[in-house]
Amino acid sequence: MTLAVELPGGMGEATRLDGERLDFVSPTPFAPGQPIRMSATIGGASFGIEGRSMGSKRRDDGRFDVRLRLMSTSRGRLERLAAAIDEAAGPSALQ
Image 1 (cartoon, rainbow, N blue to C red):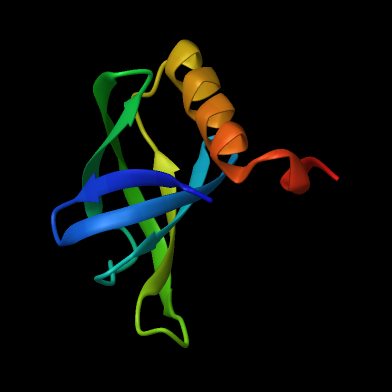
Image 2 (cartoon, helix red, strand yellow):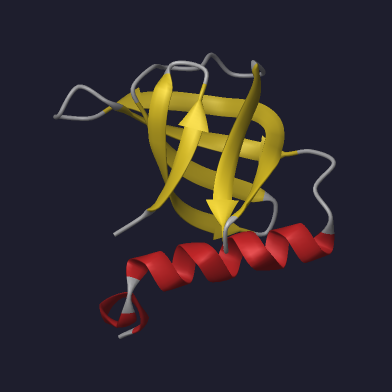
């Protein structure tokens, strides 16, 4: 599983957080440098995520793998986001 995120072009899935880089799957591509705003709901609370695209790559299913350089994201929010992505991935992702 992945963490659902709401994007301008529809729903996406956050798949990995590495430092201040967020990887997610999107129904639409984003050019490098393009600003992106999305939201995620964690523990019943919705919060915004902002950053700039590091590029997109088309997947076999027609969606896009996107890398986002996070901007103006507090350490606490990064920790909650990382925990939610890990929790959504389940125990098999930790093996």
